[in-house]
Length: 84
Image 1: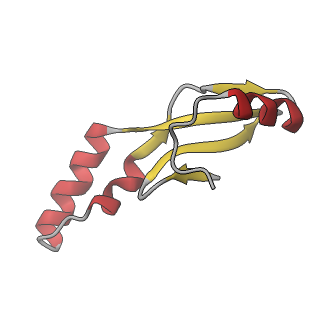
Image 2: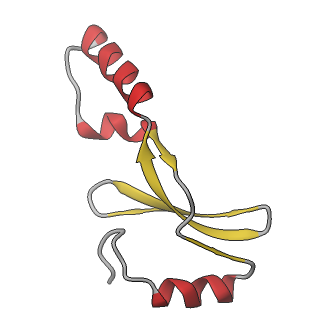
């Protein structure tokens, strides 16, 4: 699940039995390649065209169960988009 407000900023995933909250970090080299190709092919670039260059970074939270993960999320100072 991707999280963010206006653009993706983090992802929640389950890997190897661990629930994880990982911030998305920009792969600058990949983004530059995508930018150069877009400008060469179409002459335009929009911010969302860089989203595929966002890769999961080091986990902020990991937990072995959904319940433990939710408890850790609730205790976290939230910076990954609006909460409703």
